[in-house]
Image (tube, rainbow, N blue to C red; front, side):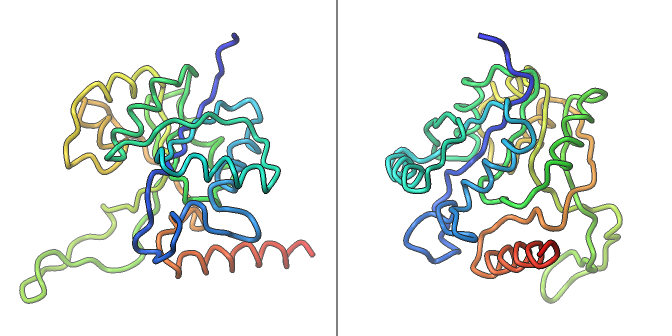
Length: 229
């Protein structure tokens, strides 16, 4: 078997309590297609040879297979079991990954562009780890409701996915044990001594976690349709 150049691990292990839906948020419909399908399609559109690995809770895997059949969704992808923590899911998925470079992406960020994916992977020619980020627009204060001080927002960023790595280095970083400070893959890699390069992310590459986020995503897709109609 020929080794792939690119792989993506799509994390879809959440149950979406903040969404208030009966099914996990990754299965909710966005423009007549489940969110997770749209996310997978982003990476297939970038490069149809990309190895796609999806982490899903075991109890929802048969449901996913059923909706794939109902939607005639045939993009090749491998399903692996999600763990108790996101960390566990990624660690499990990495054991199935054999590509040179791997992107790790939230299953509920379905609006990223092929250009952003390409920029992340391209940057890996010079560094080992790349993360898309956006500068903050609003003022920040540090402290409590009754005792706070202003801080310099220019030194802070909001972090997105896909977080992209040379596969060998992120696999090595994940050989550690879980710690509560591991909020994303960059924090795991950084804990192992790695350095992160930030590149500019995309406004539309927002994580869908609430009904409001879903509405914003629908409005974005509608605006794209109107632009080209």
